[in-house]
Length: 503
Image (cartoon, rainbow, N blue to C red; front, side, top):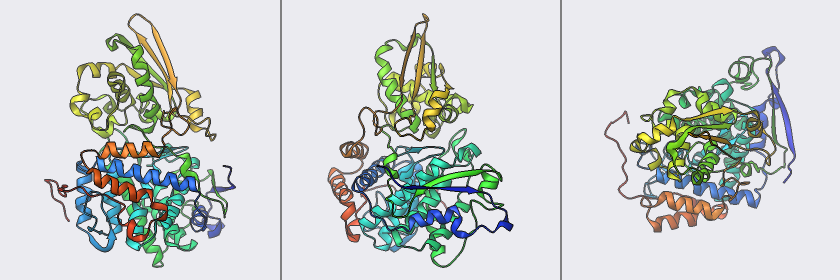
């Protein structure tokens, strides 16, 4: 569906030029947030899918240490009316910023929810936890929440299409803070001025380096989006009380573009919906069938397919993956991270090693969010031998498809060349993961529900799964009271680890 989009040219202005507030990018984003448009039915359906998707990956991670710790911290901040926490009793309520903290880390821990890849990459599903938490706390309806989620997805995707952060080693959550603030503006019916001030604050506070995704990747990777979202809630609260922000935050002489992005002579062109235009960007995003970096999704499918042609993997001399610039330099050998080849590396690091992922998918013919990353699985001698025969190279064709603005052309896969010990060469390629909207078997509601049930199996009781799914599927029409039930309870869940903290 074609939409009326307005291209906003954004550049650096000297302080003496006195750029009017109404011409600043943060104001334009705020105008989108405060434009009271309806939500198309297919957008509302996809929002429900992603709420289900988030809950599934959160359920699977509930007993991981980072999630236990985040939940423990949140439970030290009880509040009324407050917001619910994944795994806890429905009557347990904490401050909405701390619910965002606990639930956001649970969603992000496995790196298994939705994605959008453009000039920047992002996980727009990170917007849902803060918006749901504030909606529960403020007594909003499901319809109001759906409108807010549509806004947040729109803003984050539109920023990711236009402004690369990773080029300057800035973490992608710098686009998440503004999108959460915009979504909260829609949810709470705030003025354009208030949303503008909140966007300036949260962008100023959440522009961090990419070291969290480099080298030996730590547990902070799961925390980073929840931190940005938590800060967004605080920024909106301050803006609602009349506090102001650095301005102009993007275009200022000492602002984000001038000193953290392309510099004082740079120009960005950000397309945002025209006023009165519906917000449909969520339909350009895609979820993961496998718990791995999105650029690995199609390559896992390709490895599973190639497996039937490689009966004896010990005969493999080399495997070269021809792929995009981003895949090569972030999860491939172009990153020059020795940790990506180390069987002792953290789960977070292995998740960002296409060499490891491709080797295991070739050997096992499947991918599992727990067992595929287990230390004993990574330590198998035959796996290590195969893993170290795999390398990546950037190929302009795949980079151009990765960066394409045409949804029918945009792709995140690659071409694989396998050389055997007798010099036989086997080649194959796959542009899109099977589960992609344009892939061989796109995810539908049935697939999202199946993914949720698979991940929640042996963690969330089946009757509780049924109850949650019933609430989630009614989200566009559910009452504020029912929205408080958009969570799930797991009895006897840990709420503390062996190490204590301040709280």
